[in-house]
Amino acid sequence: MRRALTLFVLLGGIGVSLPVAIVAMIYFAHGSLELDPTEEQEGKARLAAGMIFAGAALALFVLGGGLLRWLKKP
Image (cartoon, rainbow, N blue to C red; front, side, top):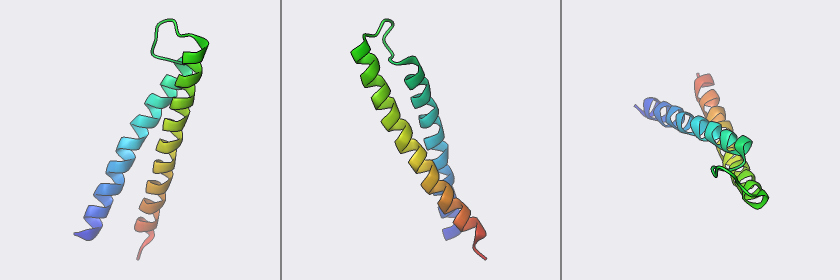
């Protein structure tokens, strides 16, 4: 039961982090959600998207490492 719950939590976390990272990268590439953003808005949007992407990437790294460690247990 414990292993099933652990697997559920790890896969759920990865399933949430990956779409967040993808949306953050799209937001970063566009620069802003405004139709005609100023340079200041673009800069702030890129900074925010970078922070979101870094957090999602860190979560994927941690959860992926936990999943691999869990799968390698005898």
